[in-house]
Image (cartoon, rainbow, N blue to C red; front, side):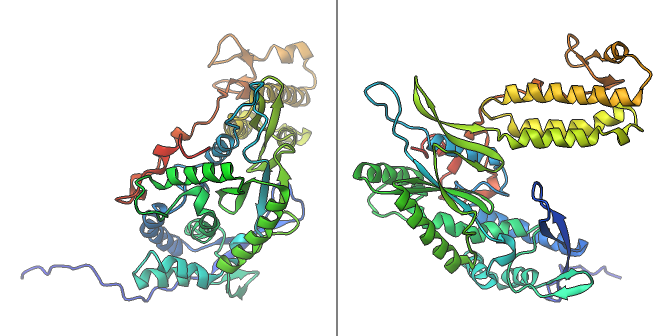
Length: 438
């Protein structure tokens, strides 16, 4: 009997996503506040991953170069380095010092419940502009309307994307791209204002910033990481306050989201502000003038010390030193890698190494109360990485020293845009990194 050829099955559209399980997790550093996390089923995760593989190449080629959150090849360090280069004064005065800041004010944007309040209709309209297949758009709509289960009760989701789903960050980026679209003139020219010009979008935007700055007009430059964003303002405080109100109206009209009036504020660059866990501001040097700085906030080392103190408290002496080091090292390594590109990071790392070493000594003191202090200190062994140094070590497991982490400045050239995100006929954003800031 001849074997039958099996053709691929035609999608019937019978798939229906299940409600996501809602789990409240505490917000770090905010006692009493919780973040709702939607946990989809295994089947829904697989389908969401497949839908993301289809949609991500389409929208990744269209996302703006000032967007850094939840995108392949981009990180928070890239956003901060872009801000630092954009805020660097270019012209010197007669005394060879830079005293004129290009962006003296900044709008700190804070969206109230971003993932929970995105308007479904406006989001699907933005997807339809790029995706012609109705089945894909319908599938995304089903994910948005699947609902959630909380405390054995079903709740409809009339707005928002379940925070925790595989496809949710990309959908949030699609909706929040309206922020960059508002400042297209100073960010990237998607459409040429004059057909005779042969320059690309980045170069045209830089030319527009230069001409507006010479003419004395206000300039707005956004930098966004997911739902956290700032807008650099080249103008007066009144211009920044007026743009803050106009941006709130624009965001509500295009996405259904609202800016938090308490947390969205206008700040002077000289006062500094916190963004993505870093401290950013302008520093005055009597030799060179103003210069932008990315620093570690004072609260972050204090939080790390508090966490190390909790892990070495008296009721945790049951395990061995190696087990305790295996518990501490991932925290120390991740913290150092995140803040290694800040100014003065080396001094902070050395201070933290001293504190961690002291906490480990106190932990061993409680574990071995009859041992002498000199005996405990002699138990520090030569490091396997640097034999000239002695560290707390148990067999092959040793204390990770933050001070050994290389400290340098992050480079925009380290970012690599994936090949699938490049459309034919569109320039590569990262190849113009040196020209995209003024």
